[in-house]
Length: 461
Image (tube, rainbow, N blue to C red; front, side):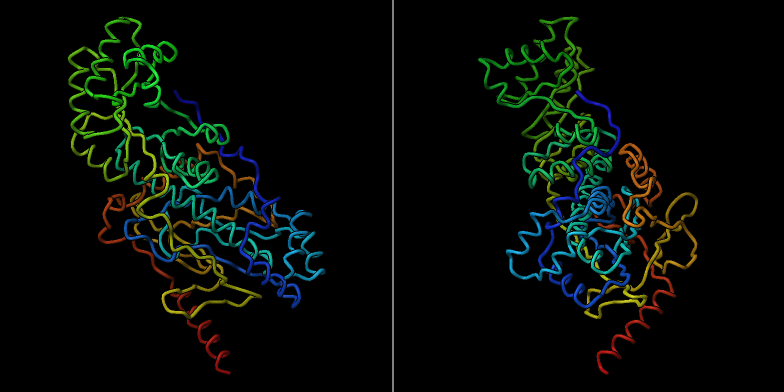
């Protein structure tokens, strides 16, 4: 039971009403910027300092929601009334916020692009107060969606072409996560979601079978199977409510009763030793002449269990993956940062150990040989290095560019094309040896030293 996919839009737009979805210090800094007329152009980079130990790459995602927010950002009357009651803000500052809009430019890698440590996923160029305020919201959107897409990619890779369905909604961290993860999963290659609202909002394929409670509500398992198949003849029947192999035999009996009218498409295994049960179920079905009935598996699955089942030869044609993909249980967060790299035409950086910032506006170049990526280089924006530039302009003067809103189908195809061009070793579930090479251009390194020397001199003056 699925529906076709189309465009990525449909969810109510962010922005209006979300202006206060920020950290308090963003607003207190803004008041000082306003008072001191610190409104010159700033550049902020959004990047991941280091990959989780379990990841060889990340799949950039979440740009659509970040752009929605930027395009619609404004303070409502109720927001300003609340800030007045907080007692930290002057009247002239609150009056200034009434007309606050994002008027900057945004450069980003397209959603579905593989990225690596220290590479900008997104760069915002805007007056300092505007670029500062949006940090918390933009970072949260790109962070969450990138976590979700990157985890889903591992599951899809482990499935080796077998169908993967998102079953994670019920244990995910709220409505927003359940919806936006389903979108990110789809970009990463997941085939469908059980989340009906996500299906509506993003035009995703939706899929589902039945719950154990449906079986329990009937006087017998055969009666439950008959009732469900009468309404949904091409369904997938859940067979492990009581005894799993007896459940499979009840499917065989249903086929005998219905004869040519039997159109059940598959069975679902949700517990126990899925490898052993899948092989035994396949034997029962084949001996009954039901070789076209497929076996679908679910129940505490992640990429490692999916890989184990595939490598064992379990005759499973699809996987329903829930909690562990839904919350990215092994790597639920990234060391993501949003940092000022230029203000008023001068490069900016931090000198704190372990938290390096590369100054200036940047570009990332991906070099390829024989259709395969061989390494990336992070460079200053005006450099012309070998390779393909990854960052594209997606917003100008606060308005999204026409090419910045591809359909989900296009994003999914982009991800597949980009991934097909990476070294195969990056898709292993264990750390790649060697890791994918990312270098910093000679000019950028020299500029970083120059900016560091200036900052040190100013501190000691």
